[in-house]
Length: 79
Image 1 (cartoon, rainbow, N blue to C red):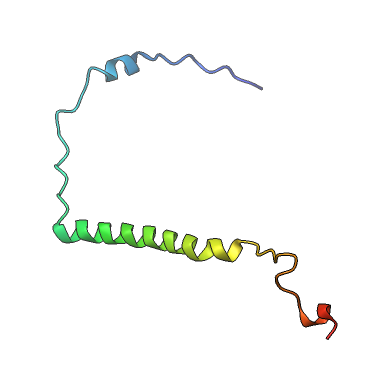
Image 2 (image 1 turned 180 degrees about the vertical axis):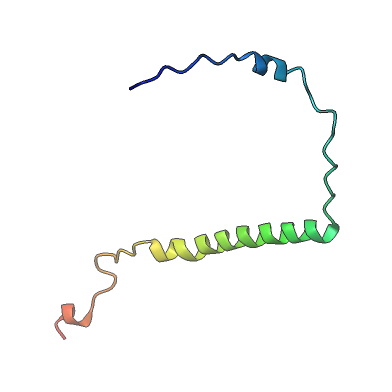
């Protein structure tokens, strides 16, 4: 029913460290000035959007608690 697997020799792993490739990958292409500028503009746009959402969102989330006697409606004054 259950068959035991044969032990696997791991000598090939020790030999793999000795064989290294002498082929170097090609050098990366340098980004052009327009690509760098585009990346900067995209980053600035994202940061400005996040900052703008904070500037507009924080006042909207604040709870305005009216002071006790400063603002009363006409209904509370009996008119």
